[in-house]
Every structure is written in structure tokens, then in C-alpha cells.
Length: 293
Image 1: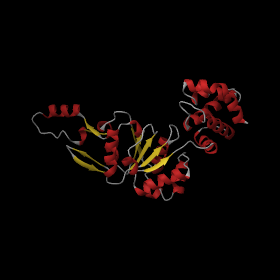
Image 2: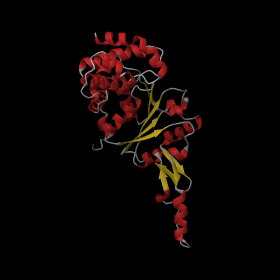
Image 3: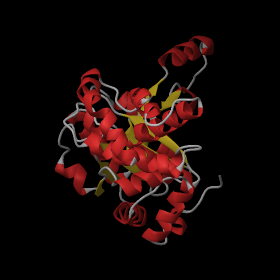
Image 4: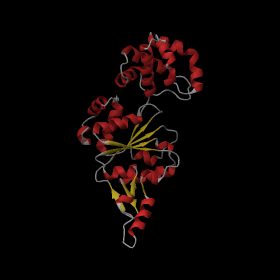
């Protein structure tokens, strides 16, 4: 897909929503507005919400709309600069020194530099979108490091100097809110909370993303999932699980399993926790039958 100028693509929230829909991502008006403002203001976009509501998928769709590569930095406890910014390839440096003998060699040349996600985006901000996924899984030290990066979109390499982005990068951060993020980080971002969609919108998403699923099946899945999420589950099903459930039940139905048995047999693609399965099993038949009614 050809690269698209960000401001040309983001002419209005309505245009953003239409372009995302063409990339098979349905964004409501508030999310489309947040994306529009983040692009036009040149600010990072912070998306918070429960796991499975479509935060990462939103970043993928934005990159697709802009015709850019998505560079994903998956956060975890203990992540540091070497994994996020850059590091030197010490083995190649040592080999180069041995081969050079008495000749001078610049061991801080580009060929020895391993660019990690943040540096990759700084080098080509017009060609890449940065996704900092699950920032809440990192620790406060990494959050401080990222804050410095987001302030000026530059990094300093002691052996090379400062590297700045030639254009404003598009940066998307996601958080499952397992811990509170620093206020300084929030202030630098356009913020949006993504909640679970209502049954009507979820049925539309299932129809858009599932292959060969009938509209009635999509509505039944959306209705059933709405009720299941309302229960005290350890791991409520996300939108992607709802899409998988619709696909799996359809495959079983085409293979000879009648409704609603196909839904019950495919429950393992929706609920993925043993205690949750035990909790929902006694009422699953009723939930499915009411959803199909």
C-alpha cells in the first residue's frame, strides 16, 4: 500500500473513521476523533482499556491506512534501553578489530549499531508508526526513559551524538491499566478509553472480520458475549474471541452440528480459563438459546 501523508489522510474524524472501516476496523466517533487530533496535533495517542477491546488492532489499522510499517515495542517488566532504543553489536566490533590489525577502524559505524524500535522510527518517521504496546507492564524507570523520548523525539548515543526525527513520528501507546501511568506521560498524549462495544456494534465487527458468518449468527454471538462479559469472570472474552467463536461455531454447524450445539462445542475459543468455563457451563445452554431467539 502506498505511503499516505498523515494530514492528508486525517482531514476530519469522519474521514478517519471511513478509512479505518476500509481497513476492517470499526471506530466510533470518539475514537476516530482522538486519532484525528493525535495526528493533527502531532501528539502521541494513549489508548487504555481492558484486554481484547481492540487497542492493538487500532494501531495496526492506523498504520495500514497511512501505508506505513508498524514497529511494535512489546513492553514487559524489566525492559530497558537496549531493547527499546539501541545497542552495539559487540561481537561484530571485536571481529572487526581483529581483522583490521594495525589499521584504524571506526567501531561505532552504522554497521555495528543495532537499531531497536524507537531508533527505527526516529530514522524513518514518514515510513513507520510506533506502537508501544502494554506500557503498563513496564516499570517506572522505563516509563521515564520513554517520557524523555516523547518530549523531543530524539535520543542521544554517547559515541554518535544526538539523533532527531526529521518529521513528527506517529506514536500509539496502549495500556490495560494494570497500574497507573505517570501524569507526565498522560499529559503528553491524546487520551482515549476503549470500552467493550454494545451488541449492535459488536455484531457489525464480527460481520466485518469473520469470514462466511451469517448475520443472524453474528447477532447471536454478540448478544451471548454481552451477557457472558457481565459475569464475574477472571478473563472476560475480548472482541477477537467473539469473532473466533462465530467462526468456530459456523464451521461446526457446516460440519453437521446443529444450533445451538455448535456454540456450546466451540466455547473453548471464547472462554480460555478453566474456572470461568466451570462457572459459565451450567447456564451456557440458556444463554445461547436466548441469544438465538
